[in-house]
Image (cartoon, rainbow, N blue to C red; front, side, top):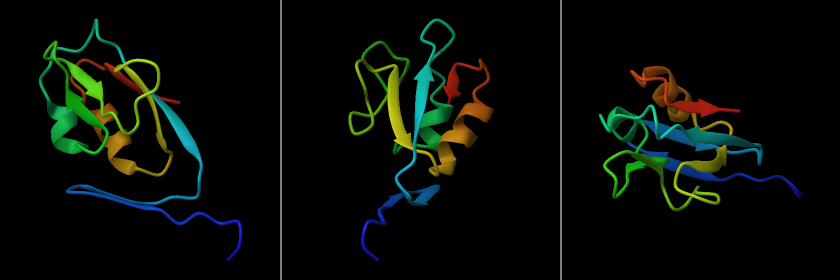
Length: 92
């Protein structure tokens, strides 16, 4: 169908068929302890940075490694945010 987007993003725990809607994701580096739970749950979006704390992968990164935009329907982002023991991940 013309004008529709149908992207598929695959990760071990994350499959998305996107409709084009994007969500803002932010990591509060002051709260993050670098436990890497988010990278285990959603490695497509999160990785550990040089500082040993969570970062947004380059694919979804915005201005810096702590902010990014991801397809809204990548459910593993919600799971990672809910599972973060420090509450360092937010999604809008």
